[in-house]
Each structure stands twice: as C-alpha cells, then as structure tokens.
Length: 446
Image 1: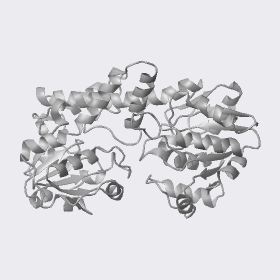
Image 2 (image 1 turned 90 degrees about the vertical axis):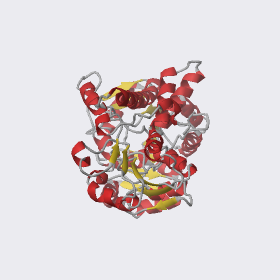
Image 3 (image 1 turned 135 degrees about the vertical axis):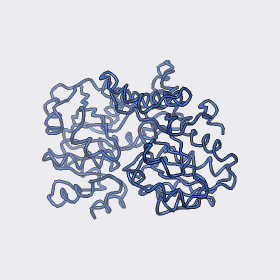
Image 4 (image 1 turned 120 degrees about the vertical axis):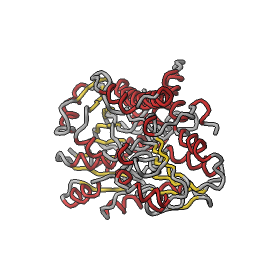
C-alpha cells in the first residue's frame, strides 16, 4: 500500500519507517524544510536507537521518501496517517490546532477515495471533528480510522514492530481487512472497536500506567518510614499476574511528552462532561511532589544549599532519549539555582536540549559524569542511564568535596556502595540509605 504520514516526530517518523518493513511505500511529510532536508541526508531529527539505519536502508531501497509537499503526498497515497503533535494548552486540554490544520489541507488535496488514519493522541470525539473538517473541503469519499500509538521513547522501533496489541477504531466494518493487512507481521493481537472507544483506550492506558508509578512512589515513601524495602515489595507485588511487574520502579516520578500531557487531558475530558476524576488528580499531585524528594534529602544532608556544589547525573526524562519535556530534572535544577547552589550538569544525550530550554550563570555544563562529581558536595542521579551503573564509585567519592550521593532511580546495590565512604540515599530502601525526613505534603514548597 501507499502511505502518507503527516508529521515526522517520534510517532510519525518511527511509524512511517516501520510501515516500510512490511512492504508498504511511505512518504513522510513535514512543513519544516530543514527537517526534511536532514532526513533526506539520512539524519534523524530525533534521537531513537536504530532509526537512522532503518532510514538509510529504506531510502536506498526506494520504499521511503520525505517531502514538505502535503498535497502531492496525499494525492499519491491510499492511506493518510495523521501523526502531528497535540501538545497541552495551559488548562491541560489537548491543543488540536495542528491536527485540524492538517485535516483541512488533506481535504483540499484529495482527488479520490482515501483512508484517513489518526495516530496522534486526541480527545474522544476528535476523529468526528476531523471527518467534518475534511468533508467541508472535499466532495470525494473517505473513511476515518483511529489507530492510537503506544510507543515508548528509546524503544519505539521495537514497540512498533512487536507491540502488545494494536487498537483499531472504525465505523466502516469493511476496513477491518485493510487495517489488518497494513499491520501484518507486527502482531496477531489486533483489537477492533468503535472510534470513540479507541480514542479512550489510549488515554485510559497511559493514565493507568501513570497511576502505577505514583502508587509505587507512595508505597516507597511509606517504606522509608516503616523500614521496608520498596524493591522487595514491588517484586512481590509484581509476581501477582493481576498486577504485573512493569511500572513498579520507585523513583522521582514520570515525565516526558505522554504521561503528563495525557493525564491532564483526561482530567479535562472528564471535567468537560461534569465528572471529577479524583483518582487521576491525585496521581498528578503525587507525581509533582515526588521529584522534590531530592531537595528534601539535600537539605537533610547539607543544610543550607547556598554556595553548595551539586552534581546532576541525567537530564532526560528517561534513558535512551534526548527528550527533556516534563523531565523532573528541570524543576529540581531550577529549585537548586533558586536556593543559590552551583549546579554541575551531565547527560550523555540530552544536555543540548536541556540547555536550549533553561540556562543560568550558576549552571556548569559537563562532558563526563566524573566531571560533574568532582569537587561537588553531593551528586543526584536523576536518569538511570546505563553508564552510571558502571562508574567506579570509590574513585568518584575521593574526587568529591563531600561524599553525598542521592540515587533517585535506585540504580545501585549494596555491594556497589559498601566501602566507598559515600553517604548514600535511595528511594524507599531504608537499609540502603533512607529518606526519613521526606514529607511529600511539604516537599513542593522547599
């Protein structure tokens, strides 16, 4: 089949590239000429392991192309995939201006029947708006399909090629065969439903995963006070098939482009139909407070932070991505600067993106984790990049001014810490260094 994918962000680019692997011909479309030129040079505008190799292979084999000409790309395609961004508005609702603009342009470009497939995360009822908007700009027939994505940055290719399930929302039963063929080879676990339910499945899934994260972080805070080990608790919980082990890793909370945006959007969706989603509101509140555990422990160990030198390991919201959107590091670093600390920052991939969003005279940008630790009073690990697990902590401790290590992701085990001389603190593991002074209710106002 011939596909046009509108948008070359994480969802659009990864989806477009992966759809070529089962024999489709794909045009990835973006208005940003610089981005298209970069892609035609086989350079990816996003950091995603393995993406550039797939771009190069499929460009050379003629199954993949990039264009800024939306109208021509739509005319040459059987299926048009909407994968543009839906960022949050100040009130938490999804901003649909980009998807509405793309829908209007698609309608104007159509010269025959098309299937319009939405992969962007959109509020319930949006695909009906897309239908009406396209219909207002064309007299040609078309069908609408909702196929929400469930990609994780850093493993987006694997998640596309080997998903847990594929959700297809449609109102024309005749399209089911075409949709199954389009996704052939990815998984046999295809769930076909109505469009509104498909839209809701995306939000409900992300909200539930965010709930698991906030839940285990609350359990970790209780573990600190009662002397239990949250890693043992999570392992025991995860052995129950009804619960499962995924998303039960205690830490400083979730971030990124999906969970914060989608939880807030679902709260707004509920509010728009006069329903108060109290559970999800609490999930968001817990997540906001959890990151300030770092500040609480720094105060506990160092007292006043004015003039203190604090090393930060990790700026991305998770490893294997350069995405710093809603990363806990942002608020933590801003709070440290406000308290007068000198902050030494290191991230193997995301430092440039972070610096574009936030810079300050009190920040020192480092090229190695050892550099961020040298001469510091404390080091705070905020992103669990694999390279941090392999560092020689004995040498690092000797290079620090005061030997305080706060592990916000529970990266290190007892055998790595013993004998280093480090004052070590983790999350929910009292035997490994507790956070007994941490109180989520007041942490956000440190």
